[in-house]
Image 1 (cartoon, rainbow, N blue to C red):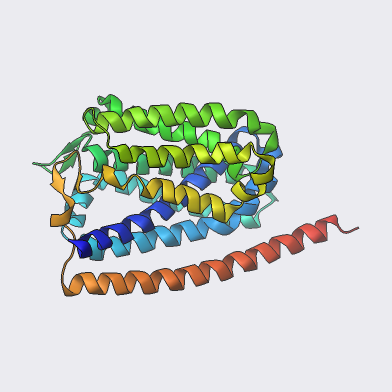
Image 2: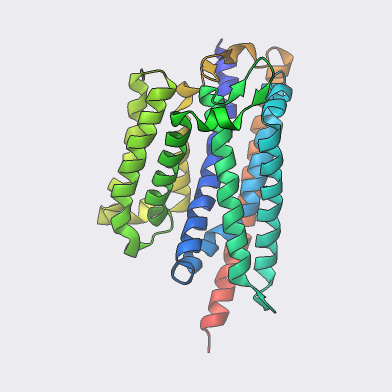
Length: 320
């Protein structure tokens, strides 16, 4: 049992980091869509180096999941086939628009703003597809397990589906000014974060059919910690630090582990019965740990290189 819990915990931890990276890009996308001129400097300084990191982390999580849950991936691919296809189309759109945006400032009717608008829309829609899939994994919303299909009408007819997505979006809007350190939007932090937190807790309550364990206090406290720290002058530099923020929110998502373990899909599937055991489990742990170390080193080197390049570019622009 201990080995199985460790396997699930490792995989879920990787997912938590990937989810936070997607969320931070979604937050930046919203900001660029509504206030391009005011926020592009701070948002692009983060988004430009990290978008490839997000994709790499996502691919790593998918490969790791193949080792952790080999018996569930094919059924899941069948259930979410349409959602996965839409996700991949949006993923290609996201990648292509931001690649062109990095190199094209103005070419005829096509300019940097239009390309980043395409990136932002693709990223937001991609994130929504991920949230739809998550509602299915948590509560089984829209899933027909007998035929391994996903019904959009059944999903849309479940109020919990909408509450979960609305709560996530409200919290993302509330936390965006913190992550990107946008002082003029500081007044949005508390109301949107608290509203999103309330809606999210209600959705989790409904997912669990009217009962939540005491453990739900942990993600609530961690979520509230972000705006509280942002309103403390001495803590602003800490909470706006990208590494600290990602680590804190990753811990927040990881603390929601009880929503998908020991059962998932609305209690219909026992997670322990799906996780690898024996030599496969040992291989999974070794591969995941080594892969994470290599990935962390490469991401660090890549981020440092991009940061130096951006600093040199800003210095060149400011120089007479």
